[in-house]
Structure formats: C-alpha cells, structure tokens
Length: 288
Image (cartoon, rainbow, N blue to C red; front, side, top):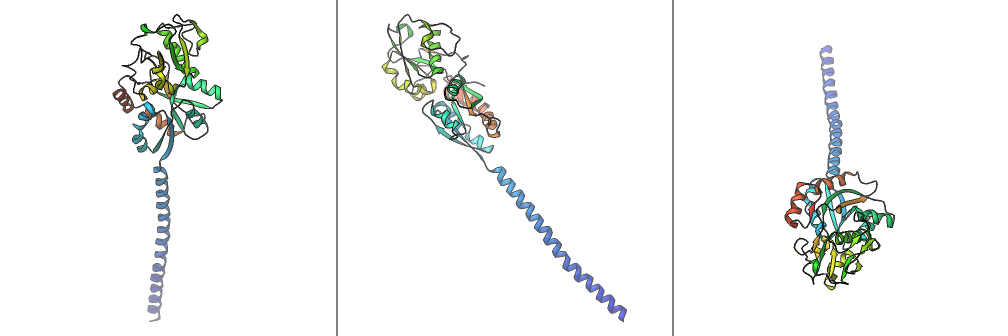
C-alpha cells in the first residue's frame, strides 16, 4: 500500500513538473521568435525606405528627361526631387553648398571653367545628351545676308562664348588663330571680314533678346524653351560630333554612392534614348 502511494505521489510530481516547465519553455521560445520577427520587419522597413535624391536641372530638356525616369527610380528605391533653375550659375553653387545632391544642365568644358573660377569641388559622373548650339535670326534667312557691322549675340560665359565663336568660324563668318581651341575668346579672332560686333549676354537671356540683333548663338535648351526649333529655325548648327555633351555632376567624394549609380543607369537606358529621340526629333541627341 505504501509503495503504491509513493509511486502515485512520484508520478503526480513528474506530471506537475512537466506541466509547469512546458509553458515556460514555450513562452521563452515565443519571445525569442517575436524579437526575431520584429528585427526582420524593421530591417525590411529600412531597406524599403526610399533614398531621396534632389537634382537641379534646366527646365528644357533636362527636367523633362529626368521626369521620364522618376517612376523607374522610385521602383529602385530612389525618390527623385526635381529643382528647376533658369540660369547656368546657381545650380553649381547650390550643389557645392549642399542644397541639392546633383545637377544636370551643363557640359564638361563649362564645368571645368566654372570650378576653376569658383574653386568648387564638383565632378562629372556621366554623359546623357547633346544639345547642338545653333545660330538664329529673326531678320535674316541665311548667313549670306549678314550685313557689315552686324550685331551678334553670344553667351557671356567662357565655355559657351568660345563654343559660339567656334561655330561662327566653322561657318566662315570669322577666322580664329586656333579652331581646335575650346577656350577661344574675341582676342583669338584673326579675321572679321564683315566687322561684326559681338555682344556677350547671359545664356538664358539670348532667346528673349535675339530679335533685337542680326544673329544670336543660342544653346538649344534655351531655344526650345523660347519656342525655337533648333533643326528648323537655325541658320547654322553644330555637328553631332560636338564635344559639348551634357553631364550629371555631383560633389567630389560622393560619386560612388549607390543612388548616383542607379541614377546614371536609368539616364543611360534605352527608355531615355527612346524618349529623347521621340520627343526632340534630333534637336537633342543621346550621348550614350
């Protein structure tokens, strides 16, 4: 009898012990599992959180081109904010000061000259397109009609001013001491048979003022913005082999960041090539 009672007590003790320990083990395991799941959820949320990229652009065609890839960038985790600038000075200063993360409005000769003049640490991360510079007139039908002493508007910045002179020289209105020099100025003019008068102006103002002159040499983005068609309205236009391709620029030391790698992959995609060709019909040319 005693042995049976002891056996029963021992059996009951084992049952109660097992029942008491099991919930504790499950609770601990559940707690660890909950922590793991919370950690994974947090990591997933962080990974899915978009990286912001603020880019400064000229309204035409740069803003239109980056707008065309905005959705594709969002799918790849990059939230693009587009900031329009109407001149060629502010975007580089805004980039250097940290107001924006990148800009897309200029060619490399302009960037090099601007960096040197303003002591800025900016760098080119890739080419996108060429906007052929062209000569326009509201008064003349051809360059043969240019009068002696004619007034010619050209950009007042070093690189685009040189670009304008090179285009005029290529079309025999002037001669330069070195037609291969991309930094020429009026001092490099060796012959000016029609005694043309050159009036440097801010590049953005040329399309608004061209009707007041005999000729104006205008960047295509500003010409397009003013309703001029670079292919149909020009009296002379740059060849497709021009070195003045438009580039994306960031601060030195940041060029290897993943968001910029993704940006350039999208800007150099077949989607952008098709968009440029379809929309601008040769007035803007893909450079990749």
